[in-house]
Length: 168
Image 1 (cartoon, rainbow, N blue to C red):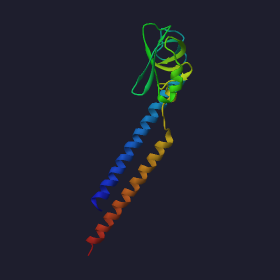
Image 2: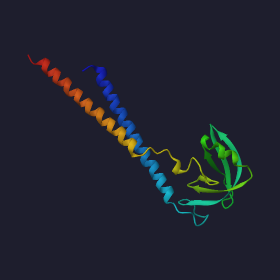
Image 3: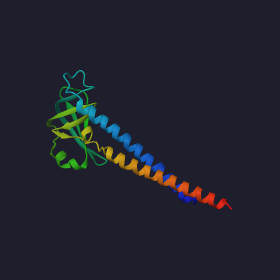
Image 4: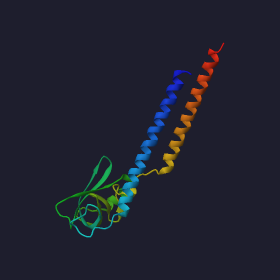
């Protein structure tokens, strides 16, 4: 078997395994975050907001952009002394334009991230994560297995041809 065929098959196999493993990791990670967020109760007190979703009125203290992201700095009335940043993507620019510095809006805070502002989901809201799901993992996994089968078949053909040449 030519060396380039062997090297190409090995490279495709390694790449397929890496993509499959990465997509599986992303699926598990994003699904865990989404599940934790969706199952978190609303905070009963402002004293313990680590494992719940805090909802309250927030003052919009600044609007800015950073590398194409649209940001809004807010301070919650019930959580004074700390400024939190709500992150929006460019697809939310029309909503971002409606927000006015100095105004107040209802907001939600989960694990230190503003997840909702004035009813809109922010880009740090786990429900907005770009989870591809198990279908993509299955497709890449199946393709990787197909490459592995072809690779094994090519090795078998190569050894069979070498054995035929060696026999007088």
